[in-house]
Image (cartoon, rainbow, N blue to C red; front, side):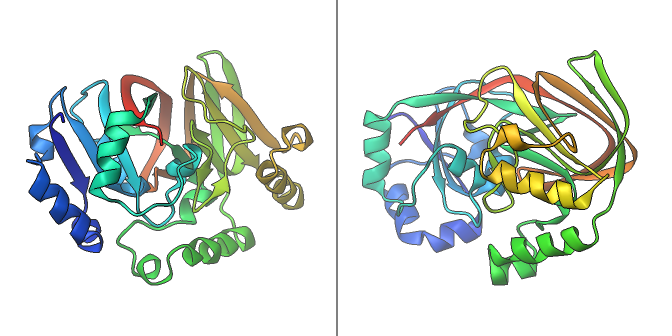
Length: 279
């Protein structure tokens, strides 16, 4: 078997200590600082662990990733139709030997990378980072608590939008927005009307306008039902290859759940692609 690298937080290693110990005993695991083009990365964690990984690859391309979703929300795993399972060394060996791989490009936001979804405005305020005490105590229930708070008192952001370097929308008042090649964020909420992930050249942009709260909530419900044809003009939704956002103030974003705040953002697909084992 090619060289294996285990990428996992200390808490994940503790949670799955038997699996990690067996893997270490059977294979000479390497660290992330020993990453090479021949590496197969075993990723143990959730969306935050994915974000850590893609921002520490040193621009290496075509690496093989065996993703074991063991985080709180695992939204990217839902886009891959990944089922729940218990990590075992036998599973690792069978997947590497028998399973095909899906090529997935990294998304880029300014000088940072993400792989699933970037949410901005109210949706970015729904989830806290992985070290938040409330999240540790309540898990997915935190998403519902924070979501209710944002529905009752959402902040409005004025944004200029330019996509594909030519289509310009000036001074759009938005509650929230999502840039995604995956489908879900915030613990399983659908953030795009599309029914399949966009892992090729394009990605989706979806934004809720601040004109009519009732219609905005109705549109969000229709997105959960995949009813793209029933979304009103109060929701912006299109696919693009590049988009630039300029806010009248700093806009809070979450890149795969990790906080990032700026007044101006450029989103596009990067040239870096990773090969995820599909099982």
